[in-house]
Image 1: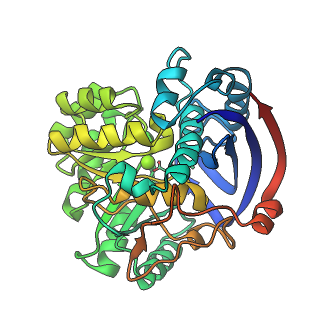
Image 2: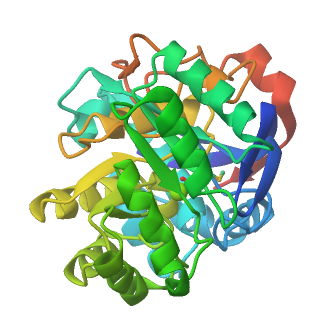
Length: 366
Ligand SMILES: CSCC[C@@H](NC(=O)CCC(=O)O)C(=O)O
Ligand SMILES: [Mg+2]
């Protein structure tokens, strides 16, 4: 298969309501979609980098630049999904940009072969239980209303964003209102330090599934120290950038659970390798989210169907964040989403919906 070019598409998707985390509040999701055009088929990739480098060092315009000047030109000549990462390895970092490009080439290859993402990645289920991420709110009553609505929709797991000053009390309020059977976890997005260990241990009585990324992404040993003070399992997100970093974190006792985000780790093939490393060490994994459109959501649901994904992921329905998705919407069914079965991602953008959120496009010829 040969690439004839890649289209970059800047899109802006307004959120139904502000999504607040410890690193800021989002009202609109600005992201880059890639369309890989080959001599056999076309494929789609979603770059999950945010507009600003506040979740990780990557950001939207930086990804566009590195794709334009380095990554896309490096894919001239015969190419397929598995050969993208080796071809790009000489360029350091830029995992989200690389992951989106690999995803688009892999999707084109799989559509040409008539193989689904789920089949290619090793999915063993045709539907997956879905969790939902709940942002930091202005008040506890507002939080309880939101959590109650998501539970009524059937979500299998609730994840609360936390930060210093909004942690123990919101968790206590959710437990008191909805009981101890609700699967409940928290995500700090690196907002704490090891000095907060005893404070974070105050979450232990609430029987949380996990505490996600309490410390800075580079604090691997500190997470291992934290795990000696906090009984609740530590889950890493931002710290896990590759199968190697996952193996190191596990060996150092820095995490008992891993949130796998394909964009963060350089693509779905590396995500599968992380899944396999964790499974070999008895570490549970789940598929994280970056407010993807239906394109990224389709691939995430396929990943979430792998056997080692034993915890509900942040694979919410399309209407968690968006009034209208750019694909046929993913709709929750009894707390589950169906794994797409068509070739490649199994979904394609709806032209009118895509045009409605497109800011600009750029064609990168090969
Ligand atoms: C765009 S920043 C979101 C990062 C955050 N993701 C979520 O909370 C889930 C978002 C989703 O439902 O896609 C995380 O750190 O896990
Ligand atoms: Mg997280």
